[in-house]
Length: 154
Image 1: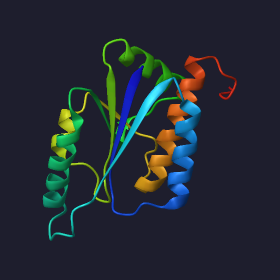
Image 2: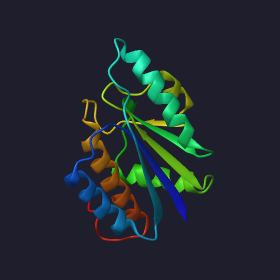
Image 3: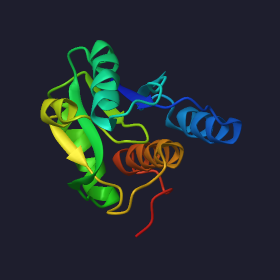
């Protein structure tokens, strides 16, 4: 079974967000094994770059040997079917895929360079709490597409 890790930076853990994420995780069931890693964002610094560098060091401790996907507004946009196909392709070569969601200031360049693939869910900047729900739903949708479940409709 493919393991999917989602690493996110942030201090707030909203109950509504967690409820939605857990609901999608249960629905994914035996298709993917999900692991959520919430890392605290660094305290405010004079420099956003310094803050992102420190957050990047925390992220790197949890990546391991996996296929790394950074979520960034400048990444490649995919349809849900394309996303499902990518996951299917990656799962043939890797036992673990790691998605990385940056904090309020985004991801450090070292993480973007380390990433095997960069995805954008929107050209707009999105709050990371919303992105967490979005990735959970898209993973469920991908699992539905890959297992021919009727959840996804064209």
